[in-house]
Length: 276
Image (cartoon, rainbow, N blue to C red; front, side, top):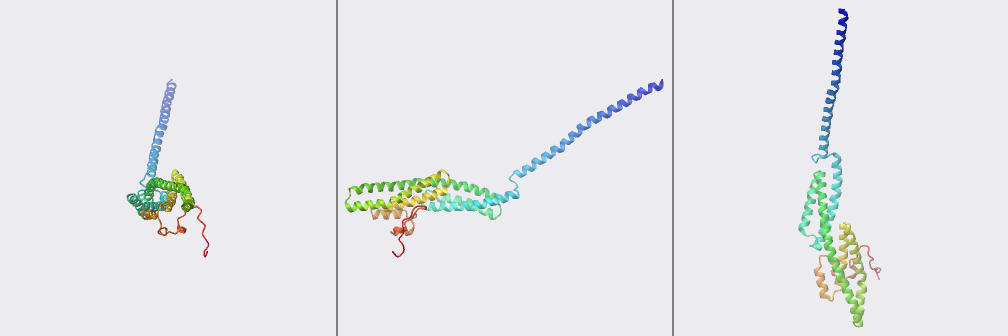
């Protein structure tokens, strides 16, 4: 009887022990999962810090420097070419590009150039991009002024030719022949001047300011030549030559028609062979 009573007691003890072990096993995975989450969270935190360092402006990678160098050198050449163009146009028409604007753009360019020679390409590229934007604004302003001034000058020449054409019909024979010859002689130049004006306006609309300014410059040269040729007398011609001295080449002050400026792409007058 005692042996029979002991056996259930032993079985109960074994069952309790097994229950305790299973309970511990069920708890361990939870603690393990929690501990597994901590390294993952730590790894994520490290990943964020690393990406933040890479994305920040504190440090540049090798590829960043290489790309910045290529862009900076290209911008350096482009900006210098356009600054030179603006300075040349400013000498012709100061209201289109004054000295203060020139000094500002040149100062930005010089600062970036120093950084290039110091091999600080990332900062140099950033300054040259800003310089490029300011050059674009200055060119846009200059284009607008050149468009207005050149259009006005060409229209004055067109009106003058219309007056001569009308006057030829009422003048005497010699005067009529002279006026008609003057109109025919300069009609092609007036047409080329308006063509250059149209090309310049189209380029300006598409923000190709360097191209626009080149065409405006050619159109303006044609308009100046027309104004001098169509002047009423020598006194008016001399006055125009002195007024636009900065824009006219020195050889133009000599009354040599063969040396008159011609537009790019325009049909130049036929030249006689040498010796004839």
